[in-house]
Amino acid sequence: MHVFLTGASSGIGEALARHYAAAGATLGLAARRQRRLLELAAELPGAHACYALDVADAAALQAAAADFIDRFGCPDIVIANAGVSVGTLADEAGDLPAFRRVFETNVMGMAQTFQPFVAAMKARGGGRLVGIASVAGIRGLPGAGAYSASKAATIAYLEALRVELRGSGVRVVTIAPGYIATPMTAVNSYPMPFLLPAAEAARRFARAIERGVGYTVIPWQMGVVAKLLRLLPNPVFDALFARAGRKSRGLDL
Image (cartoon, rainbow, N blue to C red; front, side, top):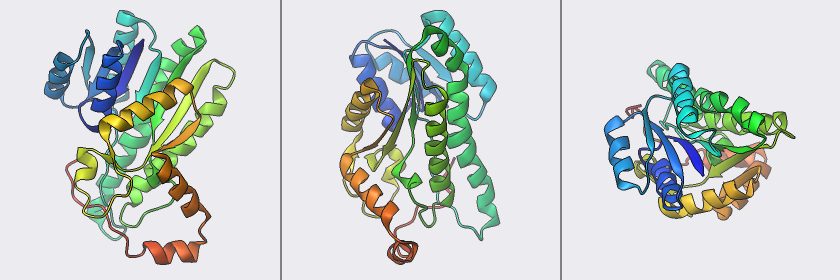
């Protein structure tokens, strides 16, 4: 099995890399931090390719995809996992660059990760394109407008892509995680119900990917919560979440 994975240097990405390497997969590990990528690759069984890049850079992703395909062939699974999260406020002009950065990474980064592999997968007649979204994309969360909007956009994009590729043999898998214990969530100062360890989350993600499910929320308890939130009338939702915990602003993106 061959897997190309972005955001591989920490958190969910690192956990997925460890899971698939333990299962004997050959990995293409992409992330911004080259040193950490090389350290991770050295810790994993097998031989793997490392690509130090920013998913906001389409040309870098195209070059990495071409190299991976040339060395190992078309991957069986491509996982667009790279993402950033930061609190933003509508009245803060200084938050606009952060808003743009979140969209460039979380939305454009996903599209730019998939694009170089789609033709090869279609020609082969099979493969998995996996997008890591979030339950934060189900409803807009106060103080997290950029993050919620970006994840809502990825959910809609993945749905469109799933239908676009129907009949091609290429399956599109949308995974919307709840709270996973990673460096991204470690900065949250509010309660995080149903928090999953990253290794357990990776195991559940891989199972969903193998089944080729179109859309799933992990853990399932958060899926129930997400459905209930979607059903809440706006006045009730607004009242409940007006005082909700908020993401910290000014994180280094």
